[in-house]
Every structure is written in C-alpha cells, then in structure tokens.
Amino acid sequence: KAGVTQTPRYLIKTRGQQVTLSCSPISGHRSVSWYQQTPGQGLQFLFEYFSETQRNKGNFPGRFSGRQFSNSRSEMNVSTLELGDSALYLCASSPGSNSGNTIYFGEGSWLTVV
Amino acid sequence: AQSVTQLGSHVSVSEGALVLLRCNYSSSVPPYLFWYVQYPNQGLQLLLKYTSAATLVKGINGFEAEFKKSETSFHLTKPSAHMSDAAEYFCAVQKKNTGNQFYFGTGTSLTVIP
Image 1 (cartoon, each protein chain N blue to C red):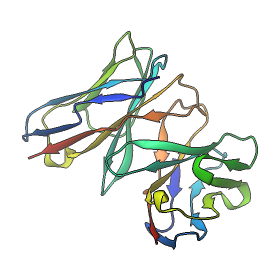
Image 2 (cartoon, rainbow over the protein chains, first blue to last red):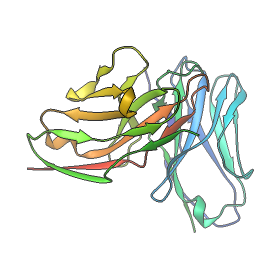
Image 3 (cartoon, helix red, strand yellow):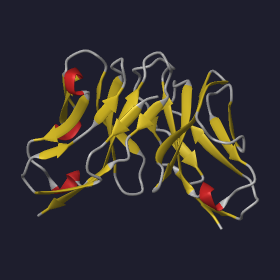
C-alpha cells in the first residue's frame, strides 16, 4: 500500500506570493492533517480535515487555509508569504478522526521563502 | 492546553549502551501518548503508542516506553543502542475526543557513538 504522498517536495517562493501544497493520503484513509515544522517552533498543528470538513484548526493566521476533496486528497494554501513561513510542511493521514488513531506522515514539502 | 516536555534536546550514547529519552506531559486526564522518530529529510515514523491498555508498550526496532500516571511520564528506552538509531525523536500527546490533533514535544536528537 502506498504511503502518504506530498508534492512538491521542494519549492522556493518570494515574499508576498502564495503557495499550494498537495497531499494524497494512504488509500482508505479519510482524515488528513497538516503540520508545520520549523527549528524554532518545532512541530505545530495546522488543521485536520475529515470527509471534506475541517475538524480541527491550530493557532495560525487566516493566510493558512486548506481543503479536502471527495477522494480524501488535501491541499493547503498559504497566501501572502512571509519569510517566517519557511518550513517543512508535513501531511499525515489516518483511517478515521477518532482520538487514539495513529497518524501516518508523508515526507513533507520543504518551503523556502526568499 | 496540552503540553509535552522532552528533557534534553541532545542525547549521546555509546553503541550498545542504554537509550533513555524522557517525556513528560501535563494533563489532568491521561491522554493518548506516542513516540515518533524522524530520520534526516524524512517524515515522522511511529515507534509506539499508548492508548490506555498495558502501561508498558513495546514498539518497533526494540524500543519500549512505560506510561507512569503518577509521574505523568512516558519515557522511551532501548536496552542497546545501534548506529542506525541516530535520529530525532518526538514525544506527542493526543487529547481524547479531539480527533487527530497532536501536540508534539520539541524533540530529542540522539547521537550514537561508535
């Protein structure tokens, strides 16, 4: 069974631009969550989607948004990029949205904002 | 709010020596607890998890962790370190009935000395 796939793996953007990252979950998984990883802040929860509905949201500004499609694939978007948005963005999937589930991570998308 | 504390951002052990990585959580209700490992330029991989069954949890690659409610701890151990264990280790908590929102510790970088 294929794992969580994230695209693109690496990208460089300029301040003020926007970016869209894509995540394909493990087949059969309906929950997708997103995390931002930086050296200073560590791993921080962005949001979780389940059956196309946002279930949870972390403490990030409205420039960070996401969505989930009917096939469970998810995208996250960051508008008006800032230098501080440079990070590894990790997507994780899980069969359901019940606590206690294991979440399975993709390899991440490295975003550099210049 | 959930909080996870990992004591020691860097731990060095000799090959063959005991590995002990510390994790404490703060919660009035014992949450679900997880240990993940991250190798360079990769996503996170589950080592083990505690979901209120046995307090001693065995994971992959010879790792285990013991849940101690009285100490609010979930320390990770391995009897004998291998070179391949060198990686970043993250403790995470998941509050019950909140979906797949995880709170991660700041991580412990494990170095294995030959």
